[in-house]
Length: 240
Image (cartoon, rainbow, N blue to C red; front, side, top):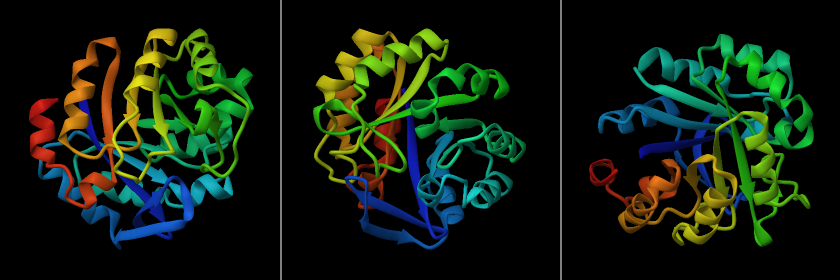
């Protein structure tokens, strides 16, 4: 089970949102490159980098930061935010990104998902962000939908994509703990492999997820709990 630190970027700085609300952001560091180095000191392999500006505008705004992190640090990066055309996909691939996160595009234009998947040589990973009643959100969490998390997960499995990131935005940035019941149900109903995000509050959440790892949990994405010292990254890596 991979432990993956999250770096969310607005205006070039490392921030965290509360329940996906852009008006409730907290800036933690001015330099995301420095933050990546901080987590790398613990021996992590991946950085989860989300361009929140790009998620709003529909085009990557902070791809240069991902490139800087790749140049300075020997780390794998999954990058998302504003990747909504094949041209943009090509640009992100040319930047050397290891996994490319699709959210809004996959939901709005699902029929083209196979084309994106093939174009990326299998580097696409779908991000499903859900809120109340387990309905999917999109466009940087600014727009809700009537699409069920579970129903859409089944469609993704049929497309040939095997892994997804699932974020519970009702808990993201809240330190309320992970939504084990929803994650377990999703795994059982879809057969997909998942990376869990949203609500990780401490080491007990890592232990809970580890217990159901065999159902298909590939990793845990941690944000605010790391930035506020609620979780010891070294201990989390040892448990995983």
